Length: 225
Image (cartoon, rainbow, N blue to C red; front, side, top):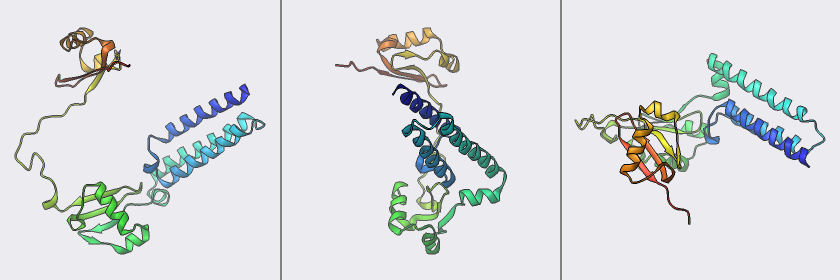
């Protein structure tokens, strides 16, 4: 029984490593080849998990082989456009300069209801406002409105937009993230002074962030009843 637990844990950790090596993508964002590899690896891992009579190495070899093939194929796809189009496909226009391409809809098996749903996900209710709609290889829809229907930016409105800075987490759930102090250019004393201003301590802080402009954001921890 203990051996079965150990085998399962090992296979689980190997699967996590395999998925991480394949890249950080959600299921809905995978290319067809990546989805096939993910399903294949999961099935290969299930066999030695269920049958303890199969040597663990015999279960790992097919998984690692599939991973190796996937990594080599990914490299070849990056280098060769023909292979990239074969394995990944290519973006397909569904709306071209305001014209609905019905042939492409039939080819991609996208119904009008599905197209309308994808447009609503982009906050577009009127299809006549769409100049271009492109079905990407991962199944997402890129939508470009006619300029007159595009929301005005700060530049269009003649406004001076302030710069954006990425916040750096200094305290996370009651723990001080010391490696981020150097990135932020702040010291532990600065953290202490900032928390004192909020009448808080590190252990009573849920989140403390600071950006390059010096703006900080503090959230206190809620007491657990």
